[in-house]
Image (cartoon, rainbow, N blue to C red; front, side, top):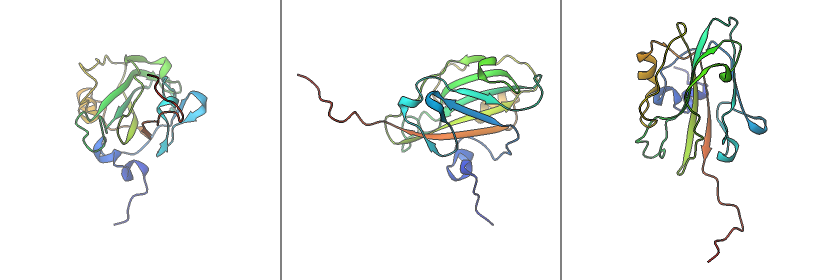
Length: 177
């Protein structure tokens, strides 16, 4: 059997966060400074302080989507006991628009990895129609699969991830006593 070349499979996003799926809708994610998210890219915490611009494809404004951003490696890849950490959730995003046209259910919280390299995963689901989705009681231990099942979202229609690790302290800085 041939090995997959899909970066979501190789990086274990499919497996740790998602079941296998076929991408069917375009999604573009860009942070300030034109830092575009592409699978396997690495962004620094200083590049992802503010929520990104997320453009959703499609061809019918009546089609709505839900976007989530999770970290399956929280608090550390070696001991992800808070898997998955929910950083952002936006629902009712009309096709051909972006996340700013949806309803923010969980406010963007910028990822701040402390230990190891973390995968930050954007997942897009097609909704059956306009629906009310409630914020979970907490961000840690969120489960994308359970969430999709609870709200009858089915399989994702798009997913993109990037890697992020703690930035070193600036060189030459010292603490004054």
